[in-house]
Image (cartoon, rainbow, N blue to C red):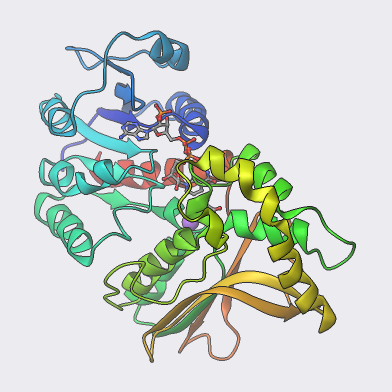
Length: 364
Ligand SMILES: NC(=O)C1=CN([C@@H]2O[C@H](COP(=O)(O)OP(=O)(O)OC[C@H]3O[C@@H](n4cnc5c(N)ncnc54)[C@H](OP(=O)(O)O)[C@@H]3O)[C@@H](O)[C@H]2O)C=CC1
Ligand SMILES: N[C@@H](CC=O)C(=O)O
Ligand code: NA
């Protein structure tokens, strides 16, 4: 393959993760002069920066974006614009948008590679999953999504390595949500009395751990999406994240509130419900934690609350830590375990940036 001396990068989404990605991208561009990384498009849901000569300055890009009078292009227009670029293009999707995710087959079929922390494409319908990987295989464009599970922790790459080297994954289990980990570690700690449930939820949002709408974490769907992705990579064609049992921590009375903000405002009225769950575990000398598991043999996937002895590694997690155990034929009774921060802008952006580096090494 002829060496490509320039690669264009398009970014959709400039929120908590997107901002951290931008600063990592700028530093990477300085560290790695070849191929030259050139920003050619950036947008939020309301504003965009792009130009006929495919050149967008990275200096003060967030201020320029905020001041821009240009609206984002429609997704098919973005695909046309990027496909006509005079060199290879990598699209970075830093949104949680289903519409953007649904367009991956289009982008990939036009030769545009994708890196993303967005779970929606890989945990939507099984058909979307197949369309994405078929489009990539056909066009040769690459698609990487390490931060869609465990943020920057090497969860997806490890599972792919296990499968591709011929190991047999029998079970995957652990704590897959940075938000849920933070909430239970601070609300029901192994030592001390812990905080107020609703106040901890607000803190998790302020710290950038939650999904844009924190109800997507509390209803268990975020963990269900991650398990759907891992199950599919392990060889189970799970149809969707709602095709197996998922426990929601949304109080019944708040299921139909209109917005995430109203939900957060009213959540303190229901703190007693989580206090009861916590006390029931305490009476048995245990703590409660939100976990998930995939049993590959029986095809059973589940997500919900479980109680743990205080000495259990899951009970002893700190901050937003995830812990993910892979049980495989080669590793036998002692699983391969990955542990560390599972949410937060910088650690998530790190997974996106490292995916970008992987794609660069394959297309340039
Ligand atoms: N936060 C974390 O710790 C982790 C996050 N992730 C994933 O990373 C992604 C980003 O999360 P986060 O940065 O926290 O979310 P934010 O809500 O902070 O940012 C989302 C960004 O995407 C933009 N956006 C949303 N929809 C569209 C659209 N249709 N077109 C263009 N731009 C759009 C928003 O623009 P506007 O502001 O105009 O709405 C905003 O700039 C999500 O998929 C999340 O699941 C994964 C692992 C960990
Ligand atoms: N909201 C998610 C973010 C990472 O995927 C979480 O809390 O784990
Ligand atoms: Na990861």
